[in-house]
Image 1 (cartoon, rainbow, N blue to C red):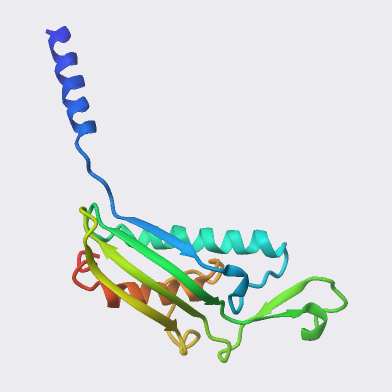
Image 2: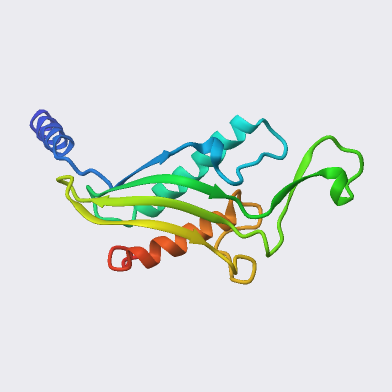
Amino acid sequence: MKKLILPTILGTLSLLSQTTYSKAEVEINWQNPEKYRDVQPTMQGRKSFREQTFADLQEYMEKLAENLPDGQKLLMTVTNLDLAGQVWPASFVGLGNSSSDVRVVKSIDIPRMRFDYQLLDKTGQVLQQAEVDLKDMAFMDRSNRLFSSENLRYEKNMLKSWFDDEFPALTAKN
């Protein structure tokens, strides 16, 4: 009896693994990032900070895309990014003679992001597309879903608001 059950289970698992249950995907193209308004580092090299910033935003967009129907794909081409705040030498903001820089976040230095996107269905047909010029002028006045220690919390909050507004029917299950 045991010999008969194992092949049946393995056969069922094999059929399930051949069935394509592809989750929604996100593909972000960071176009000419060296020309972005503000992706300035404070405590690390410019290139590594930019790569880490893009990886964090990619990961966050993938998390948001979990709410899209399976098989859909969100293609984004980012043409500008301006992080909340400004980078200043530590000595300019009263932190002594440190050689490092600090990001000072004030309400006038809003996060911004410009990108084009396409939402594709399983067959590659365009379901939705637009040019987006995001800015969050009240980023310090509204509640933020993320912890204060979260990297890029203002930018992620801005993207979450955009995502929920742009795809309301698709994210209703959230």
